[in-house]
Length: 259
Ligand SMILES: [Zn+2]
Ligand SMILES: [Zn+2]
Image 1 (cartoon, rainbow, N blue to C red):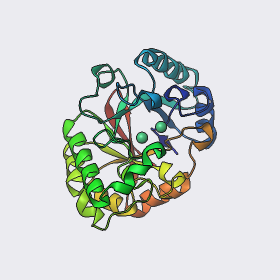
Image 2 (cartoon, rainbow, N blue to C red):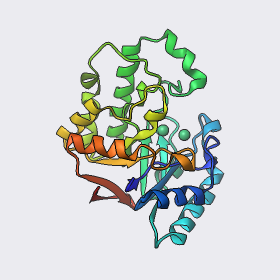
Image 3 (cartoon, rainbow, N blue to C red):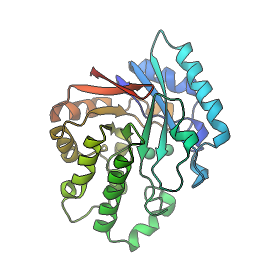
């Protein structure tokens, strides 16, 4: 991926490989701009994220890699932050980074995309869960805390699909994203999951394009091997829908480039 802004490190306790390994993998794949956005610390679900005391080390190591590889690739520093009212922390929200990805992984405290808590899906009204998810994405956009919307339709991860019209369910969220001047990512992690398609789906990407919402690209790599996987498919999808430019960020300022 020429621009690849969503990648993890072992600090989150569920990724493998060193920062160096990820960067080498990105250089090899021909990436020009590669961002780390590891799971930011939070006083909820601490098992799957770095600790607050890790932030300094994380930022230092990424900035060191930025220096080490500056001739080959531009490294950016970010965080993937959970939008979870009551649990967001100023230390993360005010961190001196290039960008923040806002992600919804929890609905009323339920980690709906975590295989550990998948059983809960069985007792839920799927259409209601989907609507609640997109309502939460809408709230996240309105909070104006983040630059990028993480995996816009993550709620489809286990392929519990609704009966209702997904475009209708996501409409207000997409309008709020546009109004907040946020970017959405084309995230290939979905290809590795049961749903076997990227986030977002083509139908939602078409709505985003019609609203003139900018995109960026993301491996969402949790191993160095996952860096730039499915690049061809995701670029083809973006072009089919009509996109020719993608976004990246420097110190929270958006920059566009062709892909
Ligand atoms: Zn993760
Ligand atoms: Zn995520």
